[in-house]
Image (spheres, rainbow, N blue to C red):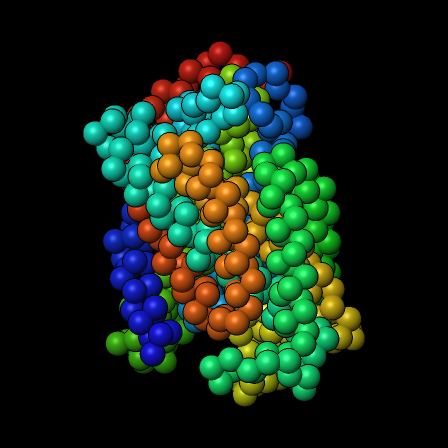
Length: 478
């Protein structure tokens, strides 16, 4: 009953209007920034390690790692699998579309966050869509800024920041250490939980609490070390799958495109289901794409705002690489591994018979494609997912704290109370169903994206002006 209610709300939030808003925002900003994701991508990657001496608290690389720590998480492993399971292989195509357009969106929202940020009396910097809305659109729109910040707090506390991540970690731990579910520790509401789930959840909660209490600088230091390493490990695993199954890749792409546009249903004569198939693929693909790379969500600008720079465009360029890394590289690795497996009749039969979803689907697809020891692959996947999700927990604590700081007008006592609630949400996350936590995350993500995209459309002229001014002054990277 609870899952059904959440699904209905999710269908409303992620209906055609929201999908259209996000896609239109990406198109408008692509035009405003002169196709920056195509023409300046190389320059963006070169600028990642550039040293800046401007006003701020973090280096550009630290800010990117903080943003990636929040984006590279369960969405890349569990989210892609749930999208394909619910929307078909075509969901991967719509993730790519959302990512290509979202790269321009990520550039614009991060650039504007630095342009409109505030330096507080104690020297710390606060910025994000809330100030972009309030300062860029004007004080009369502050209600929209507060609404965004409120949705940001909810997303961190109830959705993408806590329950989805810890749920993904404990599912992977349980899959690696007690896949049969034989060692039951406790039963809640008719659902049984193993010792692996309970212990794994407790350990992650404790580790997260120790880092979260340390604040931004501790989070950024952890992110700088963990994010690059875990991304390299997972990309290596994904590349191994692609190389070993290179001859099957064309068939996988055919399946993705057919599913994305309903050609399979149309060819079978089921014309009445074509629109539904396309809509399902778009909805799940775009929603999970936003869940994964957060372009248009308004989260990454909060991490970009404290960067030590006097040139907003520079950090906008750096941060837009995050969408490429997250979705076009990491998510694609996961998606192709799953689709490659689904093109095999033997695996597809097992998939339909067992009803695999989430991390279980990803793990079985990787194991099938690699053809090695199933246990070893699941253990390696558990490690990747644990690091991915743990850093996402840390990143989203920072985002939601900054949203709360804006709402509370700097009253840090309320932020400390929030940290306790955040840690508590992590602790209870393992005891919700996978579908429930991802649906809650989708809903809060969609609610954040709406006010942020409205502001980006209104301020697209500012994006065009700032972009042109910067490249006129600095045609080449220093």
